[in-house]
Length: 477
Image 1 (cartoon, rainbow, N blue to C red):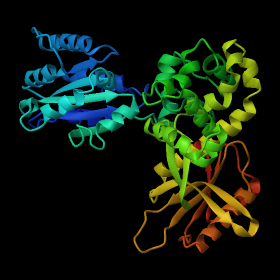
Image 2 (image 1 turned 120 degrees about the vertical axis):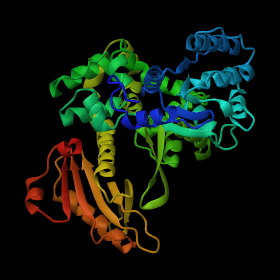
Image 3 (image 1 turned 30 degrees about the horizontal axis):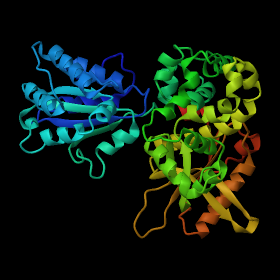
Image 4 (image 1 turned 135 degrees about the horizontal axis):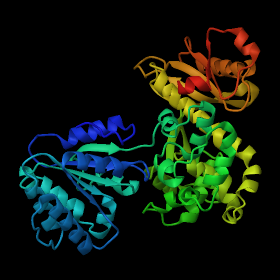
């Protein structure tokens, strides 16, 4: 099944869905599709169902009785014949499986968490009918359960959940990568692409539905674009960061969760630092951190040179922008004073939003471009002699080999708005020497400088063989 032309990118996701939907093996099969809202899951699944003559059932926040009536209507459209009224899902699921027998047919239950909220027994019913002796044995239905509530979808196949071990497909639809996002927004200037991506990331809906295809035309237009879209109280994107948190069903205390995100956005990356920022004990923020991680709003990394040290970062750029720029000026923004707020926020935007975001893009570039990369992240190197620590923005480690020292492929520093010179290389060299003493294999380690602006002439002229300079153009090439 060929991907429709109106579906941008998503080649790997489409291939996985099409392969699952066309699988001709006997018996009903189960797939789970998840991902945060606005990533295009429904768009993909609607295209899949339409292209293969399948069933697409978008669930609503309604009672079980209403949901069953709507499902009956969908089956009537599919079969062209009368369908009995279902008393419950114990009747509806077997009827579905018995109806789909002649060919593989994708059956999409979109926003599945709405159905589970009204009918908590539904996953168990599906499990029974997929099991031995169930109606799914003679069916060719390819059942796809889709949802955006990540805490609910993540629990469908975990632990002792009824559907654990039943799924033949588990697909997470993620935001576009930074290169794909630039192309999707129609931005060819890498400098401008980084600035836009540091606010809206790779979420496709933010361009089409949320700002009605309004993209900054040039570098000079960027600040006006921020004022007329992101900071404009009349544009849907304005409140989106707040809604992302409100949509997660496990969140009971929004003030605490917003405070945790504010702490991370302000540079507090450890659980202790986050707890201190919000004025709680570490054990009191442990649960919110887990929920935000399961919701794909926070990502938990480890310091590659201090494995016991956990580092948190916000996964959605729009939330970082909201916490750093919008939250503290919310009242003024709602009054329509976006231009004044932006003038007073430029410096904070560069330091708290763009700088850390650029470092993340450099790590993503390292993952994609370095064939030797086994693990990519950041790390902290203690320098006892100077009583300081060296923060390494981009660390590339080779795959671990049993009985051999871990090889460091590259140590990198990233600067968005500062010219990089020999001093930055000297810091990386010092870090490399200290790591060699700690037992790492640094014999072939490259020292990499990533710059969003320029490199000092003395650094270029040095031409050191162990130094690599990566420009913003190379990041997007």
